[in-house]
Image (cartoon, rainbow over all chains, first blue to last red; front, side):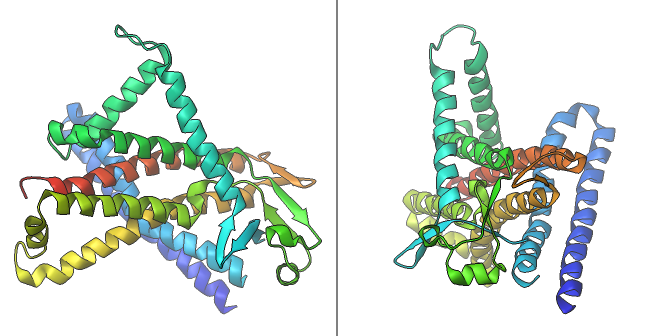
Length: 73
Length: 255
């Protein structure tokens, strides 16, 4: 029972972190594109880079969650 | 539903058979693509596969050009191109199938001993095919090789400069520089591993089974496969970009 709560917390907090982080990055990109539509291409490239970097730690939490789920479940 | 990878152990080292097979297959695929692209090359307007390869090289050169001047960038384009192609193909290969086989009897040749059977309650799901990058050993090897190469380049440029860099803005920041270097060794491989591994586990969950072959027959599975193609591409791009960033940090003239 404890494992269920712990794993649920892991996945939930990872989702919150990823959601907030990604939201900030994408919102700044949209703002930048609104100010200067010509920069759209390079801003999109930077946005994907930023998304990957921001999502790194939540994804590590998810992967560890799956490993624990397999081992303890 | 824990899946078991067929493996054999030599001198305490565990060799994972599907990972070795798919690593080889990815390398062969990269070679085949490059050979197809460079057969019958023309000096004039390129067509077909040669066009695609030239676009790819321009793309990688553009990424390198963001962080270094073009003369130093051209030295590392080959490395970046190889990394990008290999990681891209390795990430996509695991999506080809979620075949598993079920074994009820011990098969010590591939590591299914009586203890493993007891652990899985008599029915072992054997994983037959996965992405090489879903195995942490592969991603750590790639990251360690690339990061050690960047340190070697920094030392080759000038050992005095390299060590002075650690104390650069102020000696109090030396522990922070150390932590930054160590965290590079951890986050770079774990990012790639986590993305691809989590994608594969979820794909295995979503696969609907027909006898013992689980194939994509449900809508969520198709959606997830499409998203995994996207994630695999993005992670290859990020690994390549970060490699070039770390190399440029050690090699750059102005800091």
